[in-house]
Image (cartoon, rainbow, N blue to C red):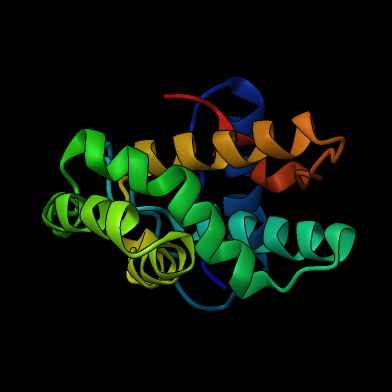
Length: 161
């Protein structure tokens, strides 16, 4: 299993070095360590926390993960992408979507907006954007009385860069 650490404080640094030492002493094969300062697309750890949270939210609110995934992308990620110019298709869709909202009514507008949101992908998010997205979801749930759990090995994922 691959493990990634984003070194933001000494506790995370210690966890990282402990993990390297544990793997090195247990393995009879070489252990590869890669150090980078790139702000790559959303990390595997961020994605893991995201789907863990969708499961928690779904269990608490009686909704399925996939519906929550689309709703949160529409509610939060689309705004981040629009602001940063990450997905230019969103900019192209908005004028038409506004016309639909004004002329076709709420039901048609909602159906089309949901389709557009389902096409938004978290894989295009930078780690910084994904951190913002996760923080938005956390705040949204907290504001509605749901305290999302963050496993200790993923605490760094939500730290603002």
